[in-house]
Amino acid sequence: MLLAIDIGNTHTVIGVYAGESLESMWRIATSRTATADELRVALSSLFSLESLAFEDVRAGAVASVVPSLTQAWVRAVEDAAGATPLVCSAKTAEGLFDADYPRPAEIGADRVADAVAARVLYGAPVVVVDFGTATNIEVVDSEGRFRGGVIAPGVQTSANALFSHGARLPVIDLVVPPKVIGTSTVEAIQAGIMLGEADRVDGLVRRIFAQLGYEAPVIATGGLAPVVAPHSSTITAVNSELTLEGLRLIAARAEA
Image (cartoon, rainbow, N blue to C red; front, side, top):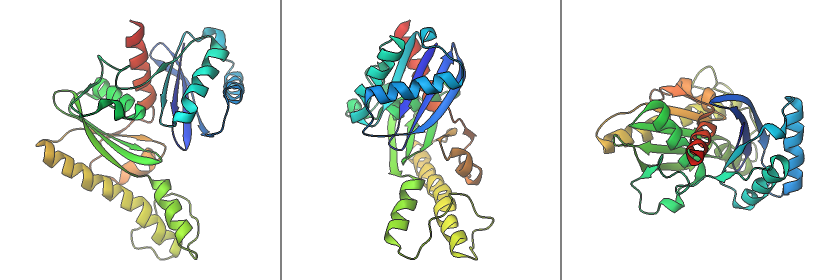
């Protein structure tokens, strides 16, 4: 089995693969102060819930945008499963990830994994929209090269900023309202945040198409992808496991 771990600023997504099949997946809160021992205990609890055994883990892969946690997770996997996980980067993904980018080392591990999975699963060209703490848009051109993209504040990040600066604004659930013209403060905020996010993505994607000179499939991933995507006119598919799939593909190539 392969243990794939996507460490984000807000959530950490953990997947267990048997071959190409994702057998289990969990989403837990990211704690920036967690130690390797605490992470190992968390892994043990998750494995116990699914009656999985660490002895069956033969490899691991980690994508991290939280540098302070990268080595803690590496050690946790080593201690629990006895396997040293691959740490995803533009360099460790060579052979699957070709970047037309001035400084490839700067590209976030999640962006690398997303681009790899999207190109393999959907072909090139392809665009990925990853709804996380930041909303990342990744562009793979018709030659299969990562060209860069867009990084913008994510839905929850934008909402938190609004709530913290608006003394009389209520904290709301991040759901799409029934109509764009809100007839309550809650509906008005939901329209601005959720429908505004869909329209922001559509506008940026159209600008990307204009710069490329052609259109491409647009794949949405991340926690809020299933909520936002139905209200977008450019998103063509949702794949909530895209980052984990990228880690699986990169790890498989490294072992080949």
